[in-house]
Amino acid sequence: MGIVRDAVFLLGLLAVFVIQLIAGAEVAVHPGDSGGVNTIAILVVICFTIGVARAWELIGGPSIGLTHEVRALVRNRERDVGSPEG
Picture 1 (tube, rainbow, N blue to C red):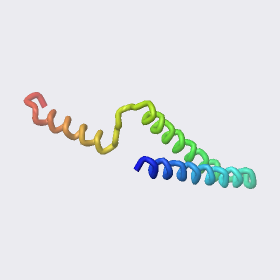
Picture 2 (picture 1 turned 30 degrees about the vertical axis):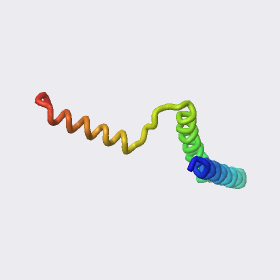
Picture 3 (picture 1 turned 180 degrees about the horizontal axis):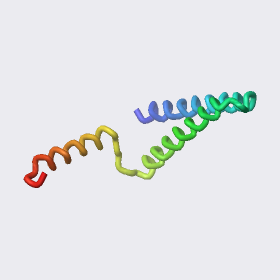
Picture 4 (picture 1 turned 180 degrees about the vertical axis):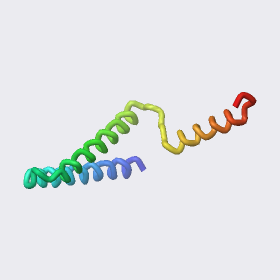
């Protein structure tokens, strides 16, 4: 399972880099068009976010998933509402 995940990760990175290269060529050909610049900016933010998540995984940080966090918030809210003070 880890090998498949790593392969998908690398293929995804390759796809992002190819899209960035195409958008860069588009910017070079049409410097007045902001579409290519916007594409590159979005991809840079995505790469940064993936890099932070990957670094967090590599240093052994705790797994934080969106669904886990939402469940914890709901549980805390239910507990607060059910308490005599809330």
